[in-house]
Amino acid sequence: MAESPTDTHEQTLDRDCRTLSRHVLQQLQSFDAAAQDLSALMNRIALAGKLIARRLSRAGLMEGVLGFTGAVNVQGEDVKKMDLYANEVFISVFKQSGLVCRLASEEMATPYYIPENCPIGRYTLLYDPLDGSSNVDINLNVGSIFAIRQQEGNDLDGNAADLLQNGHKQIAAGYILYGPSTMLVYSIGKGTHVFVLDPSLGEFILAIENLQMPASGSIYSVNEGNFWAWDESIRNYVRHVHRQPGYSARYSGALVGDIHRILMQGGVFLYPGTQKNPEGKLRLLYESAPIAFLVEQAGGKASNGTQPLLDIVPNHLHMRTPLIIGSQQNVELVESFIQKADANTTVLQV
Ligand code: AFP
Image (cartoon, rainbow, N blue to C red; front, side, top):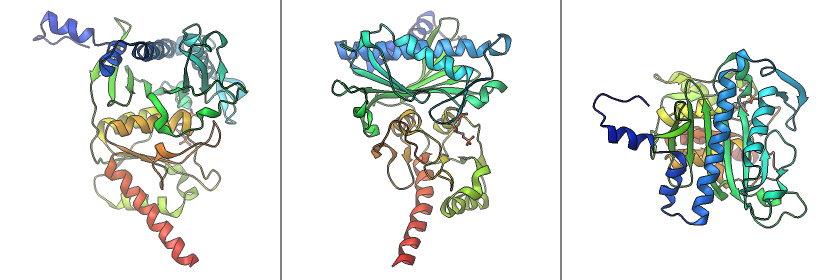
């Protein structure tokens, strides 16, 4: 961050030392083994972010970075070369870390096990390595989303069944936003904190501590191209917004970028179900639950329209869910449209 003319030498030094790993220890107010582990875990995630940011910043200059690999992932989506690279980066940074026995990613059908870590690595990393990757080839913002969960049991059959639990089980969650600057936003259940990568230091430095998002906002963020595929309740909500003065639509096609705006300025992001995909597009374990954890820690709200998002228990690792998330009042307004429609359906059925 830039030095202001009034900064003393000491203030500048102090600010430059507010690193991510130190912040985790301060939050936990402990130097015990569990605190050291969590601090080290966040440090590794930060390293993954730096590696991905570096490659993205030179993507247009290097051969073989942009475009598709030709493969299709477990979600049925075409895999981009950067998706693959980002997925491998997270695996590489956790090898021989002793921290993480399994990594579960949107890009892999089943979790990746790191046997040398398994006797001691009691955590699992869940992640979307490159969220919004359709933006990569046109040099727009993309992100990585992550969550850390405690491994329960020994997972001897390799099914990772203990990961099928609600979002309150997340120990930490966050995202890295690759934009004009690279930012890391995280929570360990003690508020939401924003860090900016200082490229001259190669460190994420604290920029905003205990971010509190506005209780309401004027941004609505949704892919209106799906308007006629949505349920009538969502169409009615968007019609309502169109009639209100002051709302602005903002949608980048990358969840991390859209959520970052809403965390900072307030408003609501929606990815509702459609006729073809009633559960929407976003994956609960790798996208929606980590983002919901962060938003709630910043005073916001997240739901699938009828149920708090963090209460949802997935029935398989790659389960999708509708997502309505953002400022509390905006989310409640969307929910009220859904409840109204549900009540009308019940009356009709009686
Ligand atoms: P990609 O990574 O395939 O680009 O998907 C991004 C994403 O999962 C999320 O980041 C966006 O909010 C959402 O999909 C956009 O989906 P639509 O293109 O259907 O609006």
